[in-house]
Amino acid sequence: MTVKAFIFDLDGVLTDTAEFHFIAWQATAHQLGLEFTREDNEALKGVDRVGSLQLILDKGKLTVSEEKFQQLLLEKNKHYLELINDINPGNLFPGVLDCFAALKAKGIKIGLASASKNAAFVVNKLGISDVFDFIGDAASVANSKPAPDIFLSVAEGLGLAPEDCLGVEDAVAGVSAIKSAGMYAVGIGENSVLTRADIVFPTTGEMDVQQLLS
Image 1 (cartoon, rainbow, N blue to C red):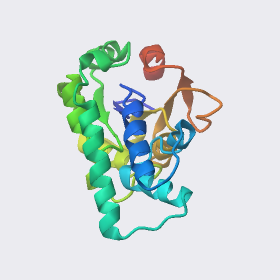
Image 2 (image 1 turned 180 degrees about the vertical axis):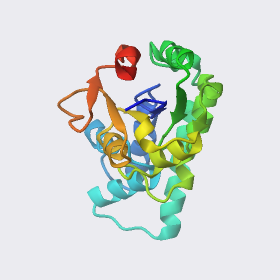
Image 3 (image 1 turned 60 degrees about the vertical axis):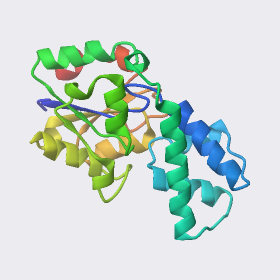
């Protein structure tokens, strides 16, 4: 394959807002009278907001009205946005800017495929909005990860075929989405967890751009 674009996930790959998600989801669960541990939060990794709330409800064997469901989503998102309001370029993972610079120097396009509907807000706070040639909108795709929709939409937005793109993810659901889209999958994390990835690096900063392009 000839790599023409790198498509990155956001949370866990470029920065870490997982703690803020955990705090906000835990507050939502407690409101429902449910316990919510860090282990529970791991199960939500790479899952969109609607799917995450449904998993919490399923765990507690609870059913709520559609009106209540939407209210809980709004409250969780408001809480999360309050928590991340102070995020800044210093919250980028080490090596991310160097990675972007290396890709730009090679003429490789850069896309963002996040399950978060707040992705544009977060990348703006991180000061990297101008880096991306296309930012996928999780709200505009029919199915969230592990479905390939968001990665396919970003490839289309970049004007490229999926097979010309490489996806970078830290979540099992995200890696599955990349593979289902017909792209080369780079995992960030542990080999034992990201078993479907074509190659895994411990951190984004340790990702070898030259190796991946060759």
